[in-house]
Amino acid sequence: MNRKNNLLELPGMADVHVHLKEPGGMQKEDFETGTKAAVAGGYTQILDMPNSIPPTISSGALNDKFNRANERIWCDLGFNFGATADSTKYFLQISKKVFGLKVYMNQTTGTLLIDKLADRDLIFKSWQSDLPIMVHAEGETVDVAIKLAKKYKKNLHVCHIADNHQINSIRKARSEGVKISCEVTPHHLFLTKSDVRQLGPLGIMKPPLPTKTTQKKLWDNIDSIDMISTDHAPHTLAEKYSKSPPFGVPGLETTLPLMLTAVSRGLLTFDRLIQMTSVNPRNIFHLPVQPNTFVIVDPSKKFKITNKGLFTKCGWTPFVGLPGRGEIKKVVIRGQTVFENGKFQGHPQGEVIYPI
Image (cartoon, rainbow, N blue to C red; front, side):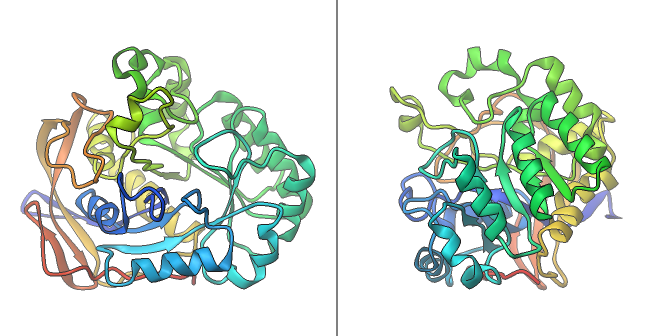
C-alpha cells in the first residue's frame, strides 16, 4: 500500500468466489458485465464458480467458458470446476486448467448438491491436486468435509463461513495439522437476520444471514479468516421477487467501500485488508502474478451505498443505505489503464488465467 497526494495505491484485488452466470443466466450477468463490475470494484483477478447452466462439470463445459471469455473480459478470469461422482473422470484432464474444485455439500443454487457420503468420499479421493477443494458446508457439515480432507490429505477451503460451529471446527482442524483456509463474505459481515425484514427476498441467501451475536464472532475472528470473497451472485429483481426467489446477492462493487469503512472504524487494519483481498487469495489459489497492476483509491470519500451507477447487469445491491468509503479513481492492469474516473478505457484486455 502506497500513499500519494492523499490517494491510496492498492494491489489489484482477487476474488476466488464469483458467479458470472454465463452460460445459462446471461439475463442477470455475463462475462463482460461481471468483469466490468469487478474492475469497478477494484478487482483485477476473479474466479468463476461452476454452478452455471449447464454446470462446469466436464472438459467440454470448461472449454466453452474459455472460448466465451476470449476478448470479452475486462479483468483476468479463471475458473473453478464442479464436483459430482461422474465429473471425477475429468479431474486429471482439467486439474492444470482450474484453480479449485467446488463441492456443494448443502443446498444452494444449481443442481450440484452432493449429499451422499459415498459420492463425497469418491470426490475427495479422486482430486489429485494441491489446489483447494472448496466446500459449501454449513454448520456441522463442515466436520464431514474436514474429516475427508484429513483422510485423503487434501487442501480444504471453507466458503462463506457464517456460523460459530464452522469457526470452532476450522480452528480445531488447524491445530490438528489439516491444511484448511476459509473466507467470509461482506453480506455476512455487514447484514444480519434482522435486516431481512427490510430486505425481503433481497436478503435471501445461502448460508443465511447471521444473528448479531454470530456476526460479532466473525469480526472477533477476522484475523484468523484468510480472505474476503464476495460470493457475487447476481439475479434480476424479477427473479428475486418471484414466488421462488433464488439464493444470492451481488457484491463485487460494494466490497471495498464496505471494508474501507470497517478499516475506518478500527475493525481491521489496511494491511490486514490487503492480506485478505489480495495476498492470501493469490497464494492459496496459486493465482498468476500480475505485473504493474494496481488500484488508486481516494479513501477520503464517504457516501451512502445506492443502486445508482452499478455496472453489474442485475443493477441492485442489498447494501443500499449502508455507509461506504473510498472512491476508485483508476485501475491499471499490466500497465494499461482500464478504468478511470468512473469510465472504462479502451477495450477488454483481461486474460483467461491458469494456476501457477
